Image 1: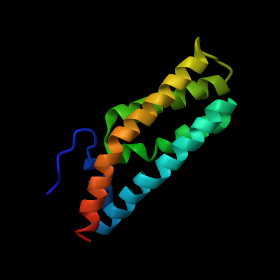
Image 2: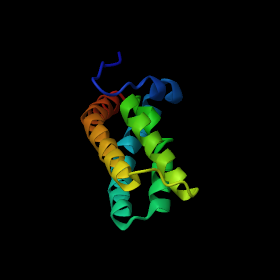
Image 3: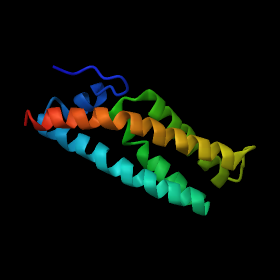
Length: 129
């Protein structure tokens, strides 16, 4: 039976794992490790104003975050990717650096909110494998 969480919704992850507990466990483990490392790297890219690397990292997370089902996290990361893509295409929005800083901060905050629930879901899945 699926547990109800405050932030995450594992319906998509469940669908993509086709109910296979081992696959679900693998996907959850990736969600616990890769985004955390990626977000640390993204902060370094922001500090260095490496917009191309930052956009690439945000774009990469667009494929991972949907598995969390956390709409705020997914949407904010999509917006971050879009504003960075605009910059790289020569269209610098007003207050670009401030917006990017806020967006990345939000992505970090939302991921931090999801993390305990992802850990719980992983622990529950590992115990059933």
